[in-house]
Length: 306
Ligand SMILES: [Zn+2]
Ligand SMILES: [Zn+2]
Image (cartoon, rainbow, N blue to C red; front, side, top):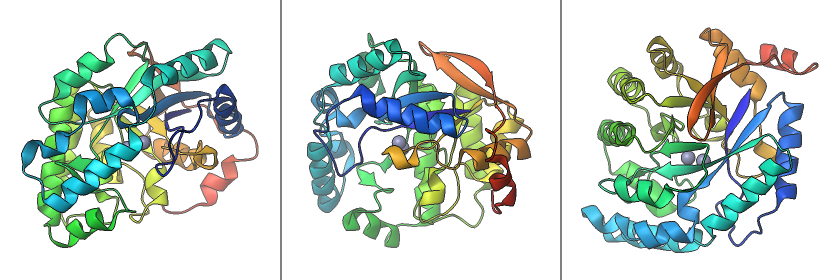
């Protein structure tokens, strides 16, 4: 099992020191859940280097002033750390023998993915997650921001899913990243169309035609939608097209590392998947879904709704 989506800092923190000891604790907790390899995937927008290249992107396409102001504040708060120091810390952890690979979670920036690729070129990344968290400058998944959440009451759910799907298609086609993270995160706040099949088909097709893997993430279970990513209908479409999978917790602190890994195992078994995709230097290779460590397997079987 993998935990291929890990953050070092909660969103409300910055200027937190980078320490190999923190990564060692992540690895210990993961190992106890039978998770044998971790990918460090901090958000690209937490680094000053991103601010230099991408800052102000939200003004590209006619965003309402309240959302623009909210996004400007959000970026100013988050883009504080040095990308080189992050990579050095991850390299140090690797050299110390910890089972980690180096990555980032990269957002989709319409019309700017060439700039993103140039920014990341030359770093020793093993895996890059591609995510859509924003529609234009609207942070549709920022549950803590009332300005962002208010938008859900003035927009049509189908239109939001349509725009999200186009962004996912463009992100996949850009070839900038390796894994589509939380493929249906647009559902995070609980807004799901009555008939999502068209969007599921298109997202699965985008993954398949780009050669990207897709992520099976337990983080949705912690959100208002109370459902993992992707939903069963999307997962089945991905598997039917032969899209490789990773598993992920999307932890932003130690408590969530390897979150519900046993339930993710049960989901994989339900669709007949017994291999995951891991990466080195952005080249994929298959790894087996290992059985759960002794003493944890029964918990998955007892749960419902996986
Ligand atoms: Zn994300
Ligand atoms: Zn994340």
